[in-house]
Image 1 (cartoon, rainbow, N blue to C red):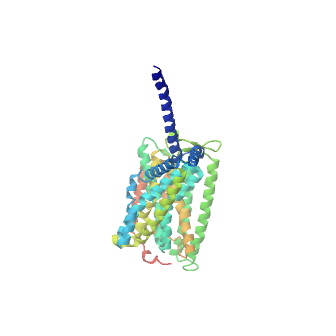
Image 2: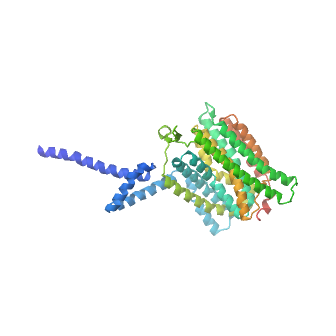
Image 3: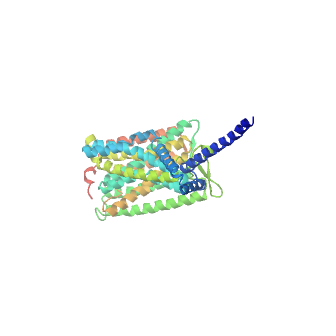
Length: 456
């Protein structure tokens, strides 16, 4: 009888001890490799230091680090079906080394960059959870266009100014018509019983900046085609460089205005899962939206560096194969630059804008699509002109008459669609159909400067 009581008394103690040990290990794993605040991570850091001093923890610590790395790779690389296209990147390099078939090199590089561009956007969104609304919004806009800027710099380095112009123009057209159109269309289908609403004031500001960009591109083209230059061959380039500097100043002023108005009006430009309290502190809305970061802050930074480096490598092969692919497939370089390249570069924006619209967060969709177009037109294009100036390349703002007219009509059409501050699936369908007309136009358009834009 006493023996039974003794056993019964000891067993609960043993069970409590085992549960305690198990909870300690679970806490260490979760605190080291799940996204948490710095205060929450402090106990795990202390436990690692104590274990290292005692000499008994390093083996378990290495296992935890290995599990964390495996979990991060599984989350970033193996969680998206689009990542099945990643092996095409190394395959493009292999084909380039073994053969001279530029068509296949271009096609495989295009497929390989597509998932990298999408994952670059994913890592940026994860990092935005930790940086807050101001820096997060700037990171989303900047890294969302990183693919196009990397491709443009490589093309500029090779003296392919026309490819730079057309790819940046195509990125603006793709964001404004295809990305925004798909967001409106998918959001309208999900919420077909109502009209979705967005901040009309923000849309008006972005539309004004886009019209300013059109003005910056229009005057050099008009100056060229009317033959009214004071110094033939020089005035157009000088005007382009001066206008580019003005546009960069205007975009910097826009950023200052946006960030200051964001601080004054706490309900604008807030990340998906955050609201700003009256005291200016971020309040997490994970309980309402069910959204939380999937990887830690430093994991996001590391993945951003890896994706950017890999995109840079593939972009060099992509740019080198553009002309060969155009000859092999008998497709105009203008169509490849304006339609195919931006679709790949805008993969991140495309996915994000649709996802936000289907969650009835049209302000986020608008910020992704129109905000990205604004950044390319007011920063990307002028930046490339200035970089070309430094490199000794005669990169200017004369995008030719056909391309400038296309951009002007696109901005006018989108501005009309945004003026009401509402959207539905019909508006989205109209924008998509407009993009198909633009794509068909560039497919039958022969660029007169294709053969003489490879020099300085």
